[in-house]
Image (tube, rainbow, N blue to C red):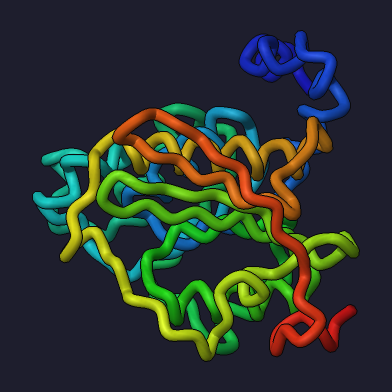
Length: 250
């Protein structure tokens, strides 16, 4: 690291859990953020500020006025622009030394497989069940750690799935792809504005911990947050022997 980097990341360098070695790992790492909305906004901004060397952010949507109640990577001047371009500009304004790749597309199929295969960590900031299942399957296939978050109404949850760890489930162990789950999207159900900040910031923290080798990630744990009462609950989760996605990988 040069003198400017030593100054920029000095508060990380003071932490025993990160220090120079951990920050060097962050600078050399590549994070894939899928979704540039409510969750993706704080994730992208904190990864950039923390010095993750390369950040690929993917989203096919454009900024809308209704987004500005909670999606802090965007503002009134970027309404109508692709969300990834708006987020990239904000990320580079915070830290122009990071490499931000903006993919204005819906990642699926081969494009999703390629993007996941070259990342060191994948952060799922989407809000569709089928999309989450596809991201999880790609992460299992390429043995990449997945930081998954969800937020709707006043309820949120975060977990880390990493099939390289024997005790870790994958997303499909907890939410089977053939299960019947009601699709709860904030466009229909509403969402408490700060909730996505809480959950997205936790996702960013888990991703940074994984990349820097700091602390204990939320593997085998589902962290649930109720914004009504400001209460957290941790539920222990494990792999399913009959999981249709990860059982054959183990």
